[in-house]
Amino acid sequence: MVAFPPMRFDLTDLRLFLLVVEAGSITHGAMRANLALPSASERLRGMEEVSGVRLLERRRRGIAPTAAGDALAHHARIILRQIDHMQGELGGYAKGLKGNIRLLANTAAITEFLPEALALYLASRPHIDIDLTERLSTEIVKAVAGGLAEIGIISDAVDAGNLQLLPFAVDRLVVVMPPDHPLAAAKALAFAEIVRQEFVGLTIGSPLQEHIDEHAARAGHPLKFRVRMRTFEGICRMVAQGVGIGIVPETAAKRCRRSMAIRPIPLVDDWATRHLSLCMRAIEELSPFARDLVEHLSAGTKGSPGSSLKSQGYSAAAATRKPPTSR
Image (cartoon, rainbow, N blue to C red; front, side):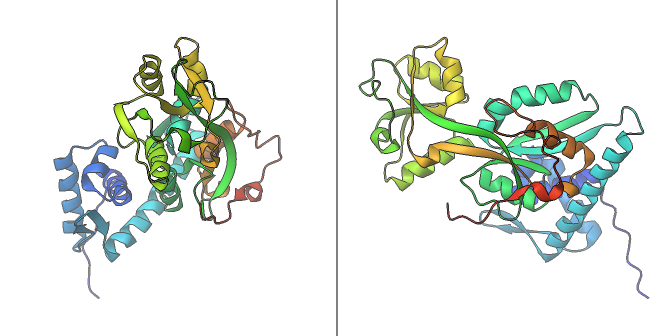
């Protein structure tokens, strides 16, 4: 019988490897793991040396797992998920044990709906930490389906495949402009009517801005940006000074309108009204910590159509599975 040397990967190695595979980049994976690039690269090299096989393949546009890397990623997901379950179950017996939940969400959910909901949740649960990361809805679906995150918040504009969905919130996009803008008297506008205007946008890489830019490209008119800002408040401040017009969530526009001279106008395009949903592989597969968070978020946040799982007599089979869509 041939004896193989033991493979020693710690949890940091496994989490790093999954994040690198998800990002398709060692640099971005290291950033998400909060590791310096040299340290992350050394860990990955060590994993390949210990295993005796190549785990990652360098390509012109980033990296991809080899067949062996796919196998490692599969087992790493199982191991990390089991650890989450173990922590959740032990949490009921060991006071002070920390639990960690990885939650992925799109821009609107992170900026407009989650701060208040998560503040209430975390304030009453000092033993739980949440790893909250902003992603495009399409990327969230892949990450949750692949076991890289337990819970995601996505828009209905993407195909969620076989993931289970629960309603979370309604996100309506509006165009904001100065009150003296030639279009400011309109009760509603189509995107095609404003696509040639000068814009104040979100910074490059923002999932919401990429969503808007995609529809501009489909219309055949890439947006012209005078400046890009990191926040919706920053966009509204620029708009109030006449720098250009912007597209922000209705909730942000209403909040900023109290102190700024801006005029929010609804966008009539279908893609401008998005229903946000919680997504997960299966309720019964979630750790106790994650199920508790889903219960909290589905109980009704600001602008949310969701209602409590318990009040509905929720069972795992009650979550909807979104049918495939071409959108």
